[in-house]
Image 1 (cartoon, helix red, strand yellow):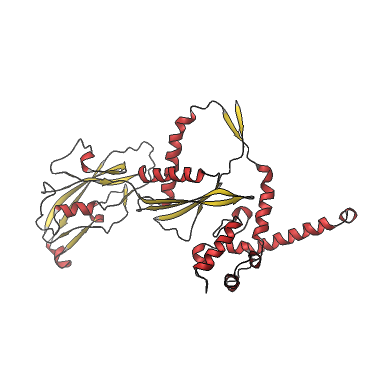
Image 2 (spheres, rainbow, N blue to C red):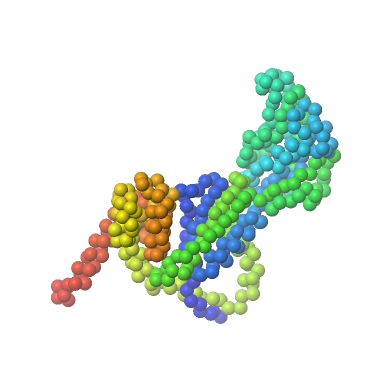
Length: 375
């Protein structure tokens, strides 16, 4: 049996602020949500992002001839405590696997550090050992290969074993469970979480004549072991996985009213706003002149420009930017809008606005004709 429900406003696309995006930071924008759902979705994603993503980390280290972490090492500038602190900063990225049966088994990465007198002479008596010198397993990508581990000042040959595991969150050394621990193996804390910070913001957005719908912005910062896009994708999949069990309680199927009847009217309303000239926005003289100087003639041209780029215009400051943002918010618009669903891009915006104005003019002229003339 089914139960009929009304329309839920939901975003059909996740937008990315390309201007500010980097390999470790991305701002995601989704709208419109029903009132309250911005916080519901944003908070859930934030908690999953910060607690539940998995990446590799070093769990233990064994350096030949060193029994514990509280000792100096002959021929190495750093003592063992500092070497361990340096190893905690290692960032390893798990490469994509093709074998679906792959497990979370730990791997011990073994490297022989062989430093001769020639190496010391070549480097003026000090050879700097970096992370890339001790991790060469093709299964992992070293995100920060130039991370300094220790400095060798005497000829030496030592074997270094690193135990790499995959986990979630932060695990202190005393909580690691290692069944095959070897002699002189030093257990260290492991930080598996690749997400350093998540912020989310909920703003009002307009749907039709209503302005109390939610616009969700999510800022994701990672350390490079996963990209922000990967992180958000993984978090969404984890969240959906946890909701599956509740769906087993299903007693009735909900049929949602998709509200398709008003789509053409809504699109025409948006296009009418986008086709407005800048001087119709009733901005201050300074803001109007700044936009005119940047050759921005219509609202469509304005909203396709990202906020950060606006500040690059000559004589354009924060005060003018805030005024424009406030006016656009009143209209249910914002800077950096993705207008692709209307067939509008930054390159063809003037052409599309011109085509819309011509079509609107034709409709108006046709409606003014008498029935006989129209035939």
